[in-house]
Image 1 (cartoon, rainbow, N blue to C red):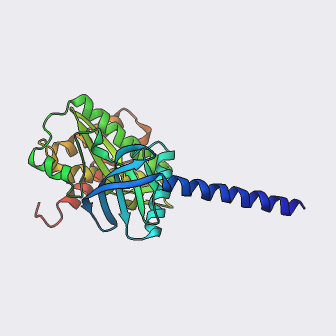
Image 2 (tube, rainbow, N blue to C red):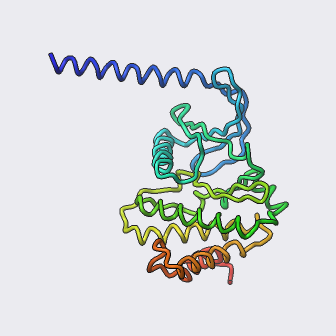
Image 3 (cartoon, rainbow, N blue to C red):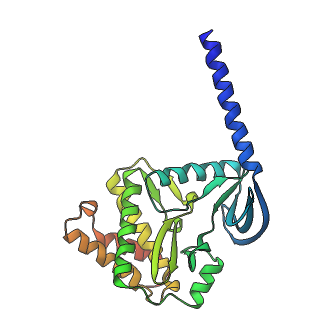
Length: 257
């Protein structure tokens, strides 16, 4: 009887879960959408969405497969759980689609170091000119904190998983593209080196969007060296010059520099 009772409770719980998921899906209606970016793993649309009785602006990402969408959602929850800056909304609205925060809803510019979104094109035409040293230091501290959290939780990221958000001289770094993040069974120290290098490389790739050009990358390197001299434990036994030189060599491979 106890086994039958447990099975009944399990079936009831699954039925409630499926009903909730169905109800949540039925409350979402896509009113209009416009493609803003396309990559190897899928397409991203700016969309007007009706949730219940409210209309809101979101982004929708359509993946190439259901497995890709599920993997991205699982990684999003892992990233969110360890308090790494990312989107506030990222959830399934179909087998291969994800509803996500529209980055530039509250920001002037949102751009990746690896795509040609509308904001990327805008930033290239009118590069960001004014960022205070205090803002840059906070930005670099956040980037280092992100590297540390990723490494401590056995995650390796890549430069194109980073996205820049800018408004009114405020600059932030988010982890946003969960196809470009992997679980890694490696020593945290080695992962820290890799994650710092990828972020430094992202700063180099973002050169066209800033009037300061390579200065963003250089100031990041100097910031890390300064922290290391202050005995920051996160940077123990890391050759900052070599890590940044690797990023620089990657950026200029084949350019003759």
